[in-house]
Image (tube, rainbow, N blue to C red; front, side):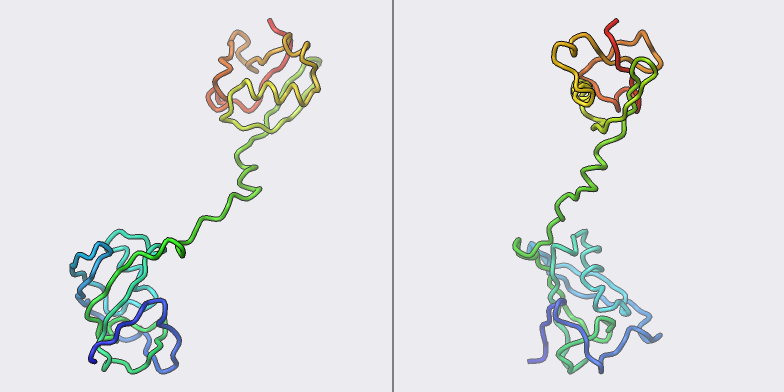
Length: 200
């Protein structure tokens, strides 16, 4: 058997492996590539590309996600007798002849981590609420939520009974004649402060 097939995930760490250093690798190599859809093509990569970068380089050439794909390669076994190779070994030292890019099974595709508490907090903002008699309070609200929800948050903060809530409303802090559309949000009006008081 003249060709030895290796998977990129298995090729690391041998003391007798060669590194990517050296002017003798200052050239490009053309290799045959089998894509995930089984079609064949050819691509050119620098001979001094480290083995650890092979998957990223090939996936970049064909606009594929490295995290979702693995790479099998076929090389001339006479180029290097070691069964495990260093990540820094240049592909030009492998006698690389062909490469197969495969999509990883769904079970090992990396998943995005769940949202953290910090992420959830970043979806809210501090809203300065001006009350009567020069009083102020601060509440945290979602700036994209409708003003009806902002109104409820303020009322809850002030412990207002249901009967009282019908007599108060939100007012623009600078445009006293503006009547809010409560279906819109703070971001819609570009506000981070608001007035809260008796209905006009």
